[in-house]
Length: 112
Image (cartoon, rainbow, N blue to C red; front, side, top):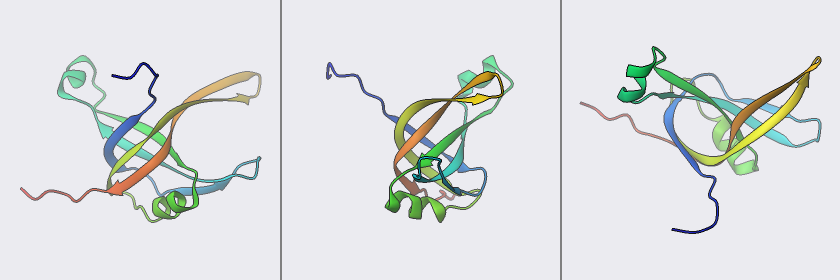
């Protein structure tokens, strides 16, 4: 095991809304989308919440193109890094965590 800290997240879930291309105030372009992931059985015993939803952002041109082709309901595997971002909303500071995508691929649904 490395002594260096590692920030790597791997999600397997489904696309919950159509990907949205955006241009940030900095001029950077991204495609953002949400991935819904089922909670584990153990987690569902502790809470009534059955899924978690994660905001993902694709920054490179190739990833933006790939993510733009995703559709609601597609099963995907996403890898990336967690990022904390803060912004102002009126007098309040709002924080959120997103996944900066490093790879995305559609998963083939298994047939029973």
